Image (cartoon, rainbow, N blue to C red):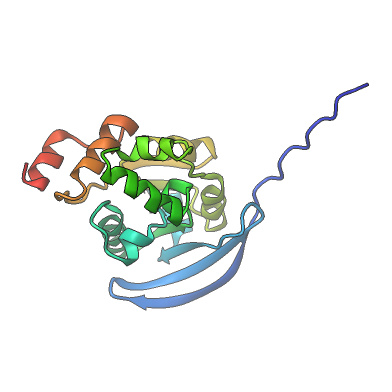
Length: 219
């Protein structure tokens, strides 16, 4: 008797569900809401200028930002997400063209509730990596195939990526996005997130150096 062959997963498809210009304290963004056939979340692009033209020229300035309710909305000091998002908003406004993808992947993909459970474990002395593992999750569950399709839909297949994360660069390249430059995206550290940032560097290979962390944190 022949064994059943599992069906290959459907390729990612994204569609634009809504778009409008939205004035913000950073400037006006075209907000583009995407839906896809892979999850039940709406992912968002904040767009300035003509991404396709910038992509064809020197590569469009781009940030792939994972949702962080605690940092982006509540102003948590435990991470660098809020300041990174604000820095990206200012950077693409100053550039005159750019894309920020706001991906609904809270807590590196484990969700808000599990992220707060991980915070409780961190209060007991675990770092971010070990806290996730103690809850039964991998270090990072984020995916980049949906982000890549969103970039393609915007005509932004050549990017200058604002990130300190080497995995993000490699994952996007694996999805067929040409990352022509990695743009450093380090923000000021402080006493509440310096251990988090050191964990990023030492256990996840992020591009920080010791001077950035010690100097900014006053240590």
